[in-house]
Length: 166
Image (cartoon, rainbow, N blue to C red; front, top):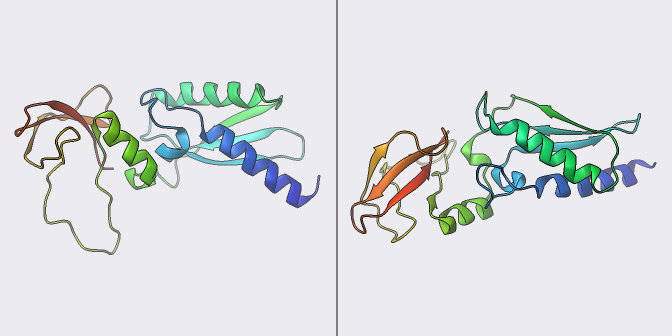
């Protein structure tokens, strides 16, 4: 296989692996969440997919790996190996703009982006995904998953999840 053909195949497989839904937030794909780091086709024929969990010990990483293996073997790739990599560490900045849009549309306040070297945000407010108000309060530091907090909007009184910044 030529280098160009291998690069095209790796890109196609990365798109396929990245389209797998996140098991905890099925509204997002693994690519939108930013945990799917890459796909490499090895000379012995196996395909290696690298994933970075949202945090060390994330219980969803096993489900993600199994779902990627199923997706790729279902498309004719017989030997798929999913490798977990911890460096560079995943950050909420890895969530794509589309992923942030989908979180808000799904009723989960997306994390605020960090601005490395940029201006420091003057507010710690979290915008309500239901009405848009920034008058919200923390109910619990943890929600249905460790990466989310439970908040309530003071304006519309609706509770909502907030994907915490990491």
